[in-house]
Length: 501
Image (cartoon, rainbow, N blue to C red; front, top):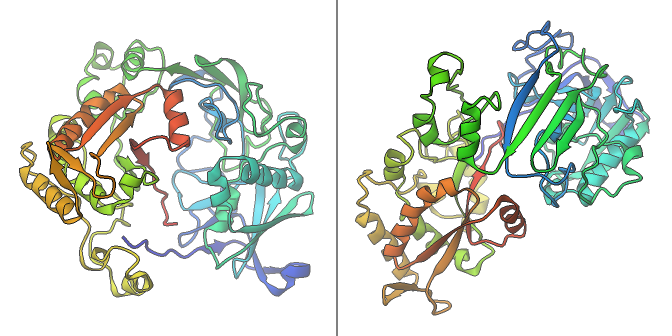
């Protein structure tokens, strides 16, 4: 699939400001918001977001839930299992409202200055922006945060910030990010997503280690109490510096937010029915179809609502670890896809509630539904011979069935592919042409609830002579094995941003 191109328009002050020194060569636009669409929904003088009640009372508490356990308040590193809700502690340079998802508005930053050639962006910090200890947020804090995340944080930060060549403080309230490589229209906004950490606080602590010391933040909430693995409570920060900003007005209204931890989906659902927590987002089609006809709902005490949207739905899939030699063979991977009977599973396991994913941008206007256009072919041509030939000639469609459970035709297609690639059947086992050994692998799960979904797939693989062993482990072991790529196959989910890239 070809990712469609977007243009970024910097909407702000009409005057172009000339910067000093190295910036003198570039024209710069100062703006209150950066957007990938035609223009921001909200102008520089907006009072509040349309979907909030700006006069909402600030009081009360809300009880939420999360799965697994936690043993750290440092969510930025690979070690440990972070507590839920930690994002409430921190603030970023800019933020995205729910009704203008391709636009970032200043948060810690009051304005941004972007070079017309996209070679750099300057974030101008709000003088009133403060950490919870009352110290002012400065450019040095932003630089420290960037370096800590890139050097000691999760590997994704290094990839995410790979084209940021230099970060420098122009003065205590101005920080400049200089970019490398070809112009990237999204990089100025990516920079805005950096969570700002206190350099003073972390100077006496090891950022690369787990910790259960409540951290210093600058957000609307701080940690009030917790018991590792059981619960965590956040309290609203009084005199929060950003409370009356237009981007925040009417938000962050609860005095207390509590997360209770559950290790089992069934127990968590029953706890919701017993009103042990207040809000639940259901992701099980079976439970959505069968579990919510209980007395409190019938009496109107529980509201169950489906909310349609046109945002990219992401995907859930069987994920091959292609670091394993067996799965480096594209033919084997393709053959295995014929053993998954989505239509039968959707009818018998998912209550007909799912649509098959056929694009990285399914459920949105960006989904690929036709052959590449002339413009797209021009982008693809340099890669001919390096990407599958069918990209140029076929509309992608995963293997399908009639939903009856009779998939002999698909299994025959799989065997033809495998035999053509040199695989053979001996004593009801598929033998690899490279190793001369039977093809076997493990499907690693973290939730017992998914065993019923994987079992039919494993049974169909058995008919191909492939032994797929299903193993369910606890969350801690699952996280560690996934991080170290110690698995053959997992069931993984991948979200998708609103814009390509």
